[in-house]
Amino acid sequence: MDDSEIDRSAWPPLPAPHAEFLAPALARLRQDARLVGVAAAGSFARATLDEHSDIDLVVAVEPAAFEAVLLDRQAIASALGPLLAAFTGEHVGEPRLLICLYGPPPLHVDLKFVALPDAAQRVDESVVLWERAGRLSAVLATRSAAYPAPDLQWIEDRIWPWVHYLAGKIARGELFETLDGLGFVRARVLGPLLLQLHGAEPNGVRRVEVVAPAHLDALRATIAEHDAASCERALRATVALYLELRERSATASLVRRGAAEAASLAYLDRVNPC
Image 1 (tube, rainbow, N blue to C red):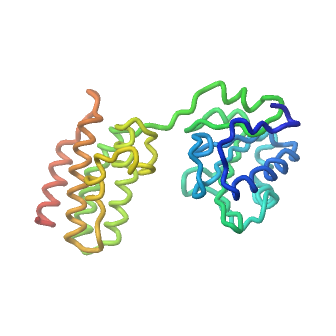
Image 2: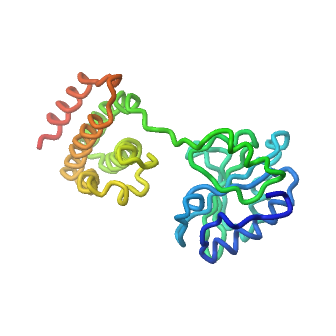
């Protein structure tokens, strides 16, 4: 497609708020000569978008104009519709991202601004919505999307100090800290390993209910109430599920931290006896 047209043949059916935002937003973005193209990722690209979905847009920028466009992100976003709030994505490790809420009705839109060559490096596939002279499509064709796989050695090196830390927090009655820690391990360790085991994108615990139904009871057991006994049970369930997933995911190169495992579990038994 060239600069004069937007091909909607690859678009999935869109709920009304999404359609009403996207068409005029693309028209406005095309007016900025610094922009090379726009692609949609996430549920749009997977054709699973529904009324609760975000719109995930990748905005490709002329490399020479990239820094200036980053400085103008808020103004660019404000021109796309009634912007209620916007903030950058440092908290998710992506400072190029502008997370926007438009409305009413409220609509979550992620605008990820990337220099054109950097558009090739991505975690999921995307659908080009508009581009100049095929340039964005050409860059995307240079490599496939690849979501980073969980690094089991990275996890194994850290999980036992985390278990020791959480056991101590339970013993001291710091239960909100414990609840946060259990959630962190669920999102960074258990969810990704489960999703990878079932051939899905290992993105936290997203869609784990659909992807891994056989493990839902085990995963639910890692959820605690604000109660010391409940937190202890959840931590033990977390350890049990991790050990299962570790053995199902391990390769011959994995170095198991057996001494740390034994010491952390012994500490858990000592300070939080069953």
